[in-house]
Image 1 (cartoon, rainbow, N blue to C red):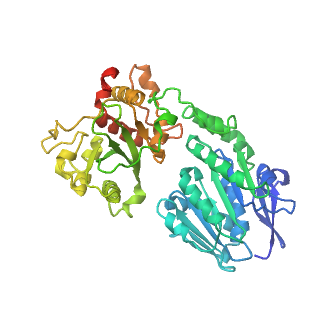
Image 2 (tube, one colour):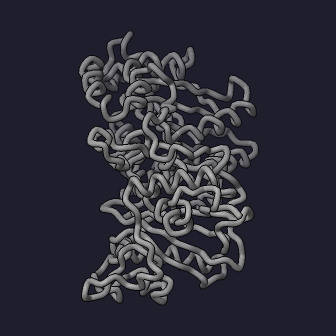
Image 3 (spheres, one colour):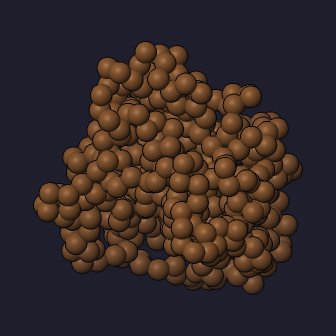
Length: 493
């Protein structure tokens, strides 16, 4: 570790991989990154805050990791660093893996110990330690890390504003230390909230402390750019906006939804802090179960839906992924039941109702007594709202209570009518997945060509699926059935 490390521009120098001689370790990075990140001493500039944002294939993460290894892991003095993503499981296949590879490429792996199970890296010479943390489970642990001086965050756009602020504040609170915060992300439609976060930090720091810049595949000197462009062109039909961002035609994928499913959704009108939990009112949980993640929206409503002082509030959202199955010791529907139960306990209520799609309602068996969530929550069947719940003889349960989910055309009419005419149709800002999905939910083009109205469910526009959109629709179906008629004048007394 006694050799001097120098950073060189790959395109100009001709170096395409790390090279060593008796005195130096020569580390090439793309010319474009070199201009933004390297000083006149051929070393990385150690800004307090760096944001590397750009399209897939730009090489931003690889370059940021090289910087972190050289300035952090190879620091001559002992420091504590933190590798962060939204979920801890994803770090092992991203930051931890990249850091480990960078150490190997530098030829200094003999001085390090890697703990694959925990995602921890230790410098055996200096004692420097880098820890992996996921914001899904470890946010409190992050607050308790002693002596933290460096944080590197991959895909920071996966975090919400509160999580980003906690991370940054954690560093800002360390007095008298040289601090570093580096974050990378793709400026897709899902990342628009990062803009304000960047602007807030920029206002606090001067130019010697803050650095941020955009990159795309044209700035990557380590790929065949012509071949990569051909791959991007094949992606264009799937997502026009992100394609334009990837080739540098637009800097942010601020997609205009050409065929919105929810034509009446207006963020400034419908996203409101007013949608908070109200005591003495029931909690309604509406789930959508698919092959991937499970989604649930939490709703409250007024008892009289037709008065001018009535309200419909989406107060929260619940996501269940494979990471919630505790190492596959429980199924995802049980994990959802536990989260619903915890939510109800946290609000000190047992006055809860449950609805959802047919999969959610009949997860285990057609026998209604087999519904895992309902059994787990010990719900009477009068509290099962709808979702085609059936008994062992394939008969619908409680037809007087159950309201069947609507087809896409009816659903679209009902939701848009309710959003237009309901006096207090609000979604709390923390329901980021709900807001993201309904903002970019769009009509299926092929169905439109056949004069059909269907929700497109194959991703794009920054939305991987429409699980929360469906859960949201189920909540509206149950709570506001009178808006389906379209006789608006009679709705509000």
